[in-house]
Image (tube, rainbow, N blue to C red):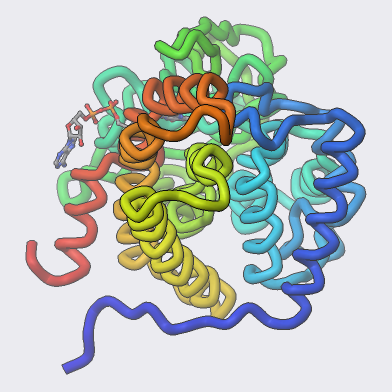
Length: 386
Ligand SMILES: Cc1cc2nc3c(=O)[nH]c(=O)nc-3n(C[C@H](O)[C@H](O)[C@H](O)COP(=O)(O)OP(=O)(O)OC[C@H]3O[C@@H](n4cnc5c(N)ncnc54)[C@H](O)[C@@H]3O)c2cc1C
């Protein structure tokens, strides 16, 4: 019997290994120039438009897209290496990351030709920041209950309602937003939602900040009050966004960013323990690294399947579920292992500071990009269990 779960072993091609060396050189130059501190973790500013433009100039945004739209026609595996190196180094990629990972591919697939030629090259040059307007209060996991609506006018649409938890909305140039354009049909409760490209400077948009318990401000409530949208900004088929949104998920859920968000704590722990950790410390670090190695192989395998044109929704949900649990548990496990470290070896105070911050930010990992429970529902369905 063939298993419903398939993780083909994938070896990164030589071209990806060379690329890795180039990315590391670039990162080292940026660190030397003072752009960011790789040891500061996510406490440091992760949003830097000028850095994104330099990444774009190297051809590392829109890597897999056609050259006609500013892309570079490289493979998913090469893109994987770039994402992995930036994430592991805590490089400030937030200005371009969402556009590169999911908004650009969405536009490539569903946008009007005029938008593709105008917007995609700008994303690839690192000039544009995108946000995702899906969640609403009362419809986070259940996106198909969205109430914010788009009403047809003579020459376009008018948006009304509110989105919540919108990461980077206060900095973004564009949003790709999900709006109700028709009621659900009797045979399909997911019918009736459409996706739009929204210029965040449009009149009628108000962005209200939401502060996290870390003290940072990354996400927002976005209120729409008669916001006009041209017809050409409707993405794909009207009322059929559910079909489009689900194919996007394999890209969103399986990348190295889904398990490396607290990686800086692991590297800080290794620095703290020094070259001669005791047996208990070595065993603890070894266990975490072995788990990371397995996660990484699964995640690379999904990248290989994406490269082969498959839609590994089940496998990417498994990577996201296991990955976020791993990165969520990491700070607490590191705190235990580092608690008795010899403070003469590493800087205990800096380590504790990083761990404290990571513990405060860790709860979000199993919520963002699909909650653990919802992912398990998808996995169960993929296995034919529900
Ligand atoms: C850091 C961060 C950034 C985010 N950025 C964005 C963004 O940029 N854009 C955006 O649109 N959203 C964003 N979100 C929102 C996020 O995707 C939603 O919060 C998430 O989908 C959960 O929705 P909710 O908070 O409404 O919880 P609910 O959907 O109300 O869920 C509450 C609880 O019920 C459980 N549950 C819900 N449905 C089921 C089910 N069918 N079966 C079993 N259990 C279930 C959930 O697992 C959860 O534990 C972000 C969230 C975080 C934490």
